[in-house]
Image (tube, rainbow, N blue to C red; front, side, top):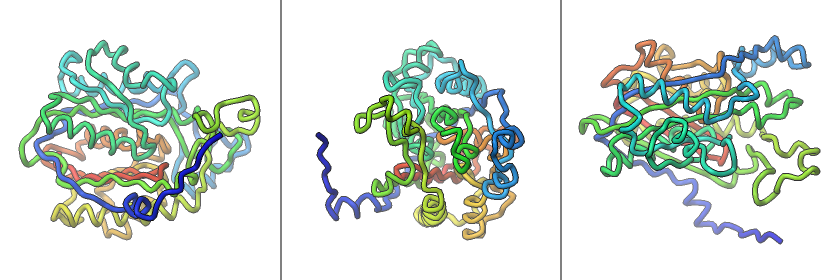
Length: 346
């Protein structure tokens, strides 16, 4: 028999408060990303009754990657991590901590970070962070604190998800939105001018039911009845989440900039969670941001949850759109409901 504890008014108010922090003296030493080779185009989905034109018009997504049957989240994380270490020219042996943001772990336990540690041949402590599509920003901020305090000299931060495994193939409105991918950054000590000039992590558990996987946990263990009802798959109230995302991201970015003393015109690159082109366009328009500085790759990958922002970051770095000293503004948002915004001096 379960017991439901009704949150107090003070708890609800606190959950919606916005608290900003600064962590300088931290820098990104390298980036890396990986997406499965299996490309699933809108045209491929049309063969199964999906409307290819609707997908493009409503989301901006043209294709996404799906992991092969023998590929799991740690495999994607491993490939991204290897590329990240190569770009930083840092050996695995120098990693002091491994953090993985994911909502699709290989197994309920152990953590995917521990499995990644074994695959890398590292000896660092490792743990996962589950903040869904806000997972990378949450994980990055956590890693930065370990560096800042001197606890770790090199922190490997990975965002990785295999969303195709938790999506209902018969759900015409959600299945086309998500894909699989991973990205990684390596954090280390930097100058006093580098790091998080301002960042904020937020959550509002009152919206937990708007975007969730109902079954598979202690509340609703997996049974034959659960599987028959497809409750092992993600469920989303799309319209409500869409409106919440635009409002929350726009407000969070404005407040982050205000806290940092910077303006939207100071930003060199804006990297938002790649959920929906209409969300990105609405935020950019509301902020009056220069569209040429917005990093967008969702047309190729769809929504890869925690893999979204680091995939885009690595692509922008490879293209020379993000360079040392640049101001990079990022924001992740999703299930929880949770969100995280960070202004980073690269």
